[in-house]
Amino acid sequence: MDQPQRGPADIEVTNRLTVLANATADAKAMMDRGEHETDKGAQTTVSPEEVDEIIGTWPEAAKMGVQQMVLQYGQPNEATPTKLLWFDRTPWKRIQVTSDQVVHKFPTPHADFLTQYIDYEVPPDKFEELGRYDGSCLIDRTMGEAAARCDSEAANFLTLNLMHEIVTGTRTVDDARAFYSETLSAYCLGESAPHCEGFLFELPTGGSGDPDHPVPPGPKAKAITQQVEEFLSASGRT
Image (cartoon, rainbow, N blue to C red):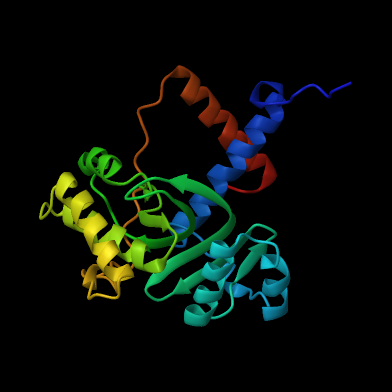
């Protein structure tokens, strides 16, 4: 007999409060240290032997993606059977290659498996335009990150360079999509394609995150805030 599915409604109220209280304490500790985010992944390294074993049965394109990233940026910092990650590899904040792929039909059908991240603040009023531009241009407002997911670093440079041009108003979405197709084709034909070869704008170095702001609490929010404070006081985490 199948086990009953457990979800948020099944979690005991005490456990819900415990998670919220500890997350609140963690955020306070980070803010006290002047941190917006943590980055522990860069402290470890995956050996060449481990990488070879992990990617042995991966799809060929993803396997080649890993080999290219190792050639350019050295050994990854973290690994699972389906993912390899690099942290703080200039110019990238983070790189992820996965054996799991997703079909992407822009500009022509291909599989996405390489995601590369930078610090970048996108104004909220530009989200809609970027959504129309490229579904594999990924924006995280809270982290203050932009990422591109495709099948090559050249395509990711192109995605993010055009993202910046849309954000700064120097290129429209329709123009960016047409330019993307022709420029990536030129690159693959061995022609000059600066948009595919590196960043054409200065990358920010932190400070792009947007933690948002609290809303005025209603009666239930005031009640849970009081319970969180009491829990933290009792546990010595205030």
